[in-house]
Image 1 (cartoon, rainbow, N blue to C red):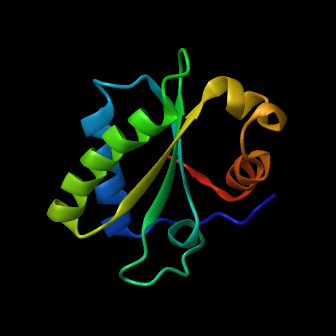
Image 2 (tube, rainbow, N blue to C red):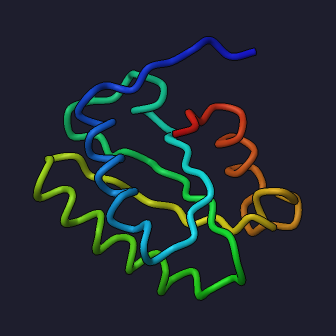
Image 3 (cartoon, helix red, strand yellow):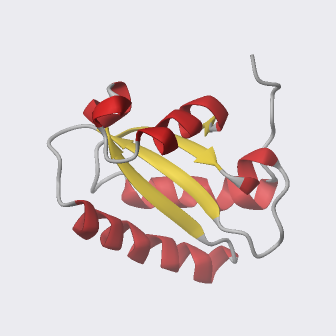
Length: 115
């Protein structure tokens, strides 16, 4: 089992604000912080990699990613934290071998911090 890791307060505030903003537009059933901010070895200008587990039918990945990026940009202006959202539909999350990038999903599942 991986050791318990903590998210720094600035990242926590920015990510929670982001999740609140998208809640009415997307059926988010889970979110995991991964990458350097999850490991605790980030620099002040490091992005916050955030996997968003979405329920429902697959939407256009690019369209969804751009819309989430627009919200992330607003959060960047407000908090100084650059969130990099990654939309992941539940069927891909539950069957990563069928997803476009199974290695990434497996790494997020292994190392990500659930929010």
